[in-house]
Image (cartoon, rainbow, N blue to C red; front, side, top):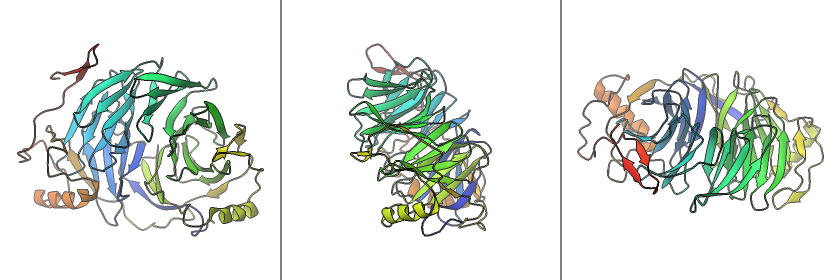
Length: 434
């Protein structure tokens, strides 16, 4: 049985989606979790006890990715309906559809200053958008197959992308050129991301592997073979010292990157795990799976001297000697396989909250109007969503559907912005009515 003082524990499950959960993300203040699903809905779960969950209705096909903006005032979602939506997370249900991709959109990611958005699509392109103007800025089109993921570096100067053409590419965002490319002949990467310092890129492989690349030296630093199925998603702890992975084999695994070893294997989902994300402070993480559940976990990596934890781990499990260190990560890229056992955590034995009922769900339909958060002084944001939605539900006389296709009464709305973006050869953007 896992120790509550030492090991990650499952706090509670969230049930409300009707199909696989494809993405999860925490609000900046860790008061809410957003999730996307194949059921076509975006949901926001308030982490306060006995709070409602909110289902945002607007996409017409599966939602593949979701992320809060850095300030929490917007939520971005990507969909197989070929659109990206920017939502204001409040009862008005206001959203703006960005249209430029010609195939399903696989991922969406804000720059760390919140000014830009990068998206990846099955149309083999990466597109960068202005959040403020809600316009397409430029496209990157050197991949030769579907692009599964694209991410900004912490400083916003670089973009990392991965594709089914079996490459991971690094792009100079200012000059719009590819400056490096890593090829994996064994399989393609499902997911890619920068570490918090921006010096390394991690890729999650369809061939069951996780690889950590140093982009300063163009060198593979770590290579993990700890899963028995494809790796669908990864997330760095804010310290950069730990990495959590989500796999089709039904498990989450946590690696200690300083020691170069697998330390935890977490069970909880019934079937493939498709998404995972640490909170901004690293004290929690959330996972989403094909079982339509969002699981909320708690950890305490930085709450005490982790070297002491490692000593306790060595008494409990047999491990190989750690590799040499280069900077903060091991120098040798030799594969770390599953022979060194990790601590197995099964939440059927350790669940903090097993009595809390599933939260009631409020449906919020997408409004046909979108007031820019910079234009309006009535920004809701994720932290005010619960109170706003509670008030809105009471005004309707029910906890059911809040239909914002009706007049919102907001005199600051600017008009319909559900237009496709057409990029011409000069790089300018023309907006046309759908």
